[in-house]
Image (cartoon, rainbow over all chains, first blue to last red; front, side, top):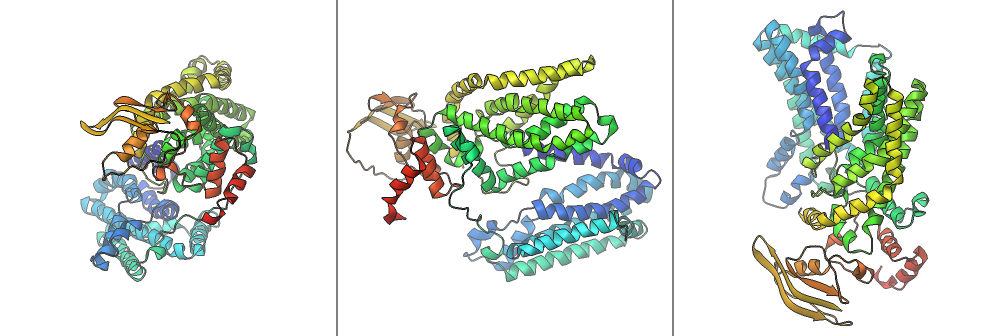
Length: 464
Length: 119
């Protein structure tokens, strides 16, 4: 996840700095200030939607204080304020402040720019507490979440498909007037304050853990079986266990689900004729078929940190342990590859490249990820959520990202530059197949490598 | 039979385990008592080859546990919650451990029947 988060953050930073150029491209007929004012509210609508999915409820933090002589009001204030420390509250500023400083300030003066920033802050606070309020309500009644999500989608459809009204016009109505009347900036601030107090009173009425959304994970069925995997003996059992790990824990599950969203990654590139070249397909194909290997594998074996000792003392050879990992990666990558088959719409070549990158992923990237797993000593607590969770992140993930991203291009790029793309692709496929066929050799290397690090890994995983 | 010879382990210069000699014969039950931080867990971890001893060795049935895996075939252990797999249900956990010892699910179910009073 760390890689992905940094990538997203980098995207937002770049977008923020070039927002003026981007707006000019998208709305060539409008004044950029008008487009800018229009876009803000659209962003905040999306923001609520994102927050509902991803923002964490900071509830468990108060648990140790509930029975101590601490005033309820200060507990609630603490809870409400810590909720502000979320990355979501940073994004609108990264996105909109550069434009405000670059364009609004020189055009309309520092006071107006200041008013814009105040208004942004007000809306951010409003969104923050609105999302938390809805999430808290939804914890008691799941339907609320669904109703709100549908409502937001309907608001979006009403504008962009049915053209009943225009969110951009409403947004401009406010921010356009803000340019002439900076005092209007107080309106969002008031909204934010109202939302804060609504949250405050709700928390005050419901300061019980079971009502605050600290529900324990749902109980699983007695015993689940994956007939496909149980055929592979001990490695199959291990892969089945790990699949249960992935599906039954929040953070690992979102690594899998994020992968599903990545299935749309290709649409961004393939629809754009300028980006239709094979090089992009190699890149996109690697991500789409290998996203799980990258996203989940980068933290290995820390997912199993809480019971790593038991893996070491049980009658379990590390060879089988590694075979289980390869099996899991292969099964899930195969699933993702099958999901990318609709891209055949963009031509057979796209599908062939995806297949080549699928071979590359299960051949080389799996081995690479496991090699780095032998150097990962940081524990992960599975019970915590995924969004902006930096636990388990170390230099290891950054170092890993370089070979992961560069290796296929080291082989492919020279041929692509000489206009022999097919040879480059064939070489990628052959390298992948060679690694798949020589897996047992790599497993031996990885095992020997693990044995030199095993005490260090186990030690690191024991340190909470 | 478990045999410990001159086992030493130190963390940051503080010696936590120093066992010149200890022999536990087959069939013996031994209790280990000590204050917090006395090194009980560290000793057990050394016996299970979970930490690298600074000196000495632990022999299980005459074979050094470090660098060998034979002892895993007949050794059961539980030191702390790190020995459980928390996302598995009890049945799944038993099936998994049973599977490692080539026991089918039916075997495991049979064995658990004998422990019915506990569940």
